[in-house]
Image 1 (cartoon, rainbow, N blue to C red):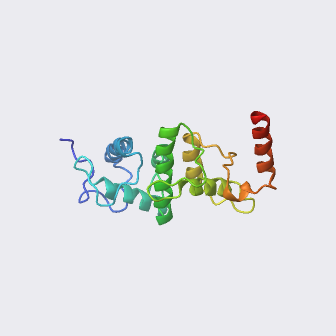
Image 2 (cartoon, rainbow, N blue to C red):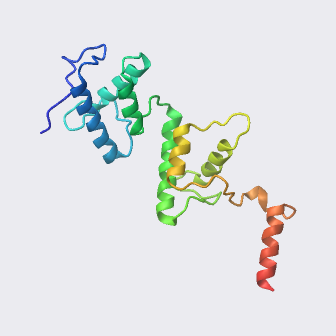
Image 3 (cartoon, one colour):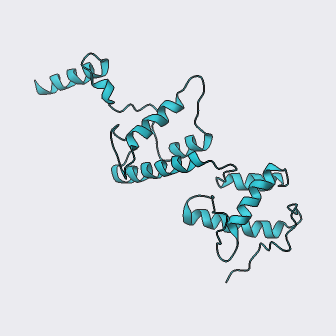
Length: 186
């Protein structure tokens, strides 16, 4: 059984910066948790190896907000992809991202057909929305971590799947495809 490095009773409520050893042990547990789960968003009441790791993670977020963390602690947490703020829409984004990862594992690419659905979710629409958000001129609404995660799996920003509106016969895309088919058939 692993020694419990975080003891709420003895740990100073003001994020005692002198307790580097306990912080480091909890950080290493978080690294292990991330390897196992794929993220650092430990549920608040979650214990990992008999340590209240969720509570510790929450205290890191609070500590940064109130400037109680040291710079090296912030840098170490960020180096493993620690997210300082969590929003409900992030959970939905992460679920869709996971579906895209699974699609890539099956198909070998991230170019999801526009009308493709999986688990009742319109993954093709979501993928196209990510590209549109990335290229918004006035206000790119993508978060940096979202861009990094998509790029880490080989996401192509410029790929344009055939959208139902593009299938009109007078569109340049339709005309190009028609010419290619015409050449191949005859």
